[in-house]
Amino acid sequence: MAADREFVTHCMELLSPLGSVRSRRMFGGHGFYVDDLFLAIIAFERLYLKADAQTRPRFEAAGCEPFVYEGQGKSVTLGYFTAPEDAMESPALMQPWARLALEAALRARAAKKAPAKPRKGRP
Image 1 (cartoon, rainbow, N blue to C red):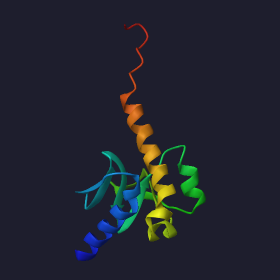
Image 2 (cartoon, rainbow, N blue to C red):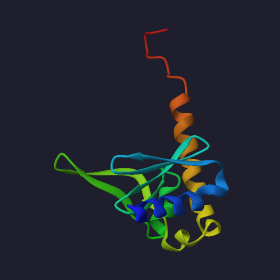
Image 3 (cartoon, rainbow, N blue to C red):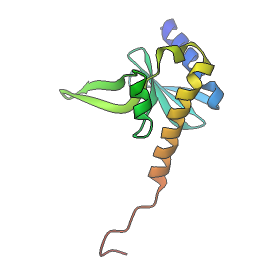
Image 4 (tube, rainbow, N blue to C red):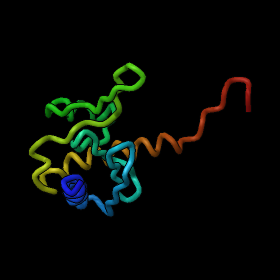
């Protein structure tokens, strides 16, 4: 349990150059918020950063692995990728990857706030 807390603290330090970081226990792991944007999770003792269609190619090119879990007999892949191993060494090395996660989180929030398009035949 102490190792778990140490890893959470380490990840918070890695993300701290982006803003105010807080963590929350969830689903047997931890979720991380930077300035109230959800952008990372710890699961299976690994840090995963939020990714989207624009950032996924960068994570894939760096050899990062997607977050996959088994649910109801099927593999489920979420929009999160492991951080590169070297990025786990310091906030400076993590910063470009954390910024990609922050950008993906900002786009996701903007998409949720976008007004719904009216349906044909409805005002």
